[in-house]
Amino acid sequence: STNVGDVFYVSDTSGRTRYGPAAMVKLGEVISTAAGAGGFSFTNIPATYRGLHIDARIRSNSSGGGASIVGLQFNGDTGANYDRIGTLSNGVSVSIGESFGSTLLQVTLAGGSTNSSHIGVASVDIPHYLSTASEKGVTAVAGYKMSLAAGGLTQIQSAGFWRSTAAITRVDLIDSGANMSSGGIVTLYGVPQ
Image 1 (cartoon, rainbow, N blue to C red):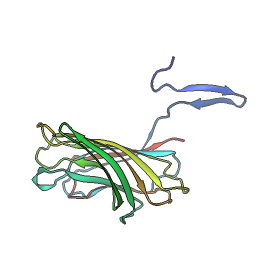
Image 2 (image 1 turned 90 degrees about the vertical axis):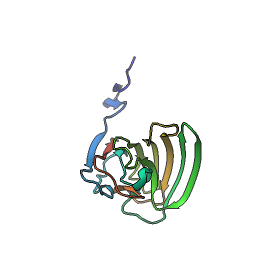
Image 3 (image 1 turned 30 degrees about the horizontal axis):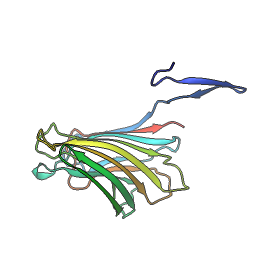
Image 4 (image 1 turned 180 degrees about the vertical axis):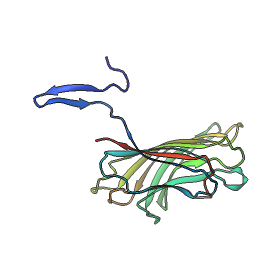
């Protein structure tokens, strides 16, 4: 039997070949130390991995305590070149929506300034970020907490596409409605071949 995370080998005529999960490689981490940061950027991403993975823990300093949209942009592309579909659910309702020609790919919502312990989190996968044969696809699972009342917890599942066949060399995580608060952490990983 094998356990989750085990690596197993299959022998062939050329020797042992590694199969099974490979550990992700941390490529960078950005920690926001002051309120007012517009976002998080990772540049000069190495062209040596199969995919990219992002873990994010963020807050917004939007006024009034409301949530603000946090999204991705690639290679500095701020044009209307992003398409997305997603499901947003909380204890009160479920909504499904899609958008075409957006200026970013929404991946989560950042909790506002009402309570300093309320955050937004996201886990994002960008497979085959080096491919020049097709547009880039993204999947994300995210959530945020706004309050302890009904509907105060929200989960988001989404998929999106960047209308470009260029290899991704830069990733920006941007708060579209305001600026990030201090204490946010975003980590970028490379997924080995």
